[in-house]
Amino acid sequence: MPVLERFLRYVRVDTRADDTSTSCPSSPGQLVLQQLLADELRALGLSDVELDGNGYLMATIPASAGAGDLAVIGLIAHVDTSPEMPGRGVAPIVHERWDGRDIVLPDDPSAVLRASEHPDLAAQIGHDIVTASGLTLLGADDKAGVAVIVEAAAQLMARPDVRHGAVRIGFTPDEEIGRGADRFDVARFGAAYAYTLDGGSVGELEFESFSADVMRVTYAGFNTHPGYAKGRMINAIRAAARFVDRLPVERLSPETTEGYEGFVHPYQVEASVDRTSVRVLLRDHVTANLRQQEALVRSLAGAVATETRTQATIEVTEQYRNMREVLDRHPEVLARARAAIRRAGLTPIERPIRGGTDGSRLSFMGLPCPNLFAGEHNFHSRLEWTSRQDLEAAVAVVIELARLP
Ligand SMILES: [Zn+2]
Image (cartoon, rainbow, N blue to C red):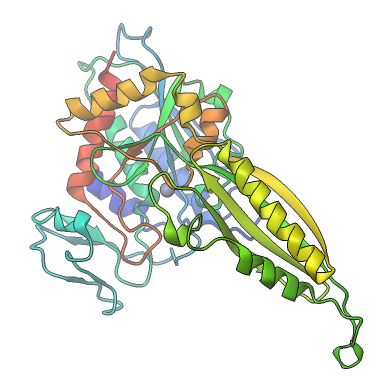
């Protein structure tokens, strides 16, 4: 079955993650897709096909005859989609041999993909472009990765003449809400290292993520009836507003940085006169720089507390670390990826991720894990798209990854 057909089937299953749920997986649709995938992998002849109680699906493409001594590598993709966009009723459309004209999505004619606004798309004239219909995301993030891995497994299982080591497959839930690595059993997975298939344009190899912490600054004030508050009320909302206003904007903010520049980003406020807390993301590719960001936030927060006669309490929580710190100690992981991309006739494109992946956390859990392209574009958007040619290129790279000695 061609990879595009697999993809079109998977995107129709609603697997939108639900960050208000505490169950794992966070939404039942993810289990529906995992069950379907488990059945497919068994039908293809994979071994050790196991769907655990948390919705993690693992399976093995056994080594070809006489190749049992080769390193066991892993391939990982996530089955959930972003909670930011509707994922129910996805109706994928294949725009065959796209001629470069505007793609108007039929269910909402204001949703238009224009080559002039999307250089990645402009480079794919003549390709079979796949979009949703205008009201939902497409779900290429990361069902493109899932379809690519299943198709590569199908091709490897069908060709006993191709020599390759054992390949472990892991399909995970709830990546989009930051929980994908939480219950990933690295020991059970049993691979020396792995690749997430969850990236964009053909040839992309990502191995540097942000290092990330989140801070919560909480101002405690004093509330009383506003009609009789003179000289008594201390409004925590005013303190928090002053604090947010003092955070840097012209530099060190998401709005003004790119490439390797880090930022401090206030992104959520819970407010009342009595108590107002602000959550602030700290991001930098160099972990040590997070301490400077933290010191800056602490000093601004403290100064405002003094001025406003509030109490400020500050919590810092580690989120994830730059996977490169681990990958630098395992140069064979990137060497293999670059070689596979080249053997598939492509050029590796390497650029830093301004975010994190499940691979960031898995790398620090003992499974070095960079990210490879799967043909995802405009993710978390109604204008999300992929192409048959992107999916096929990713399948070719995965097969070369398995074949490399
Ligand atoms: Zn993803």
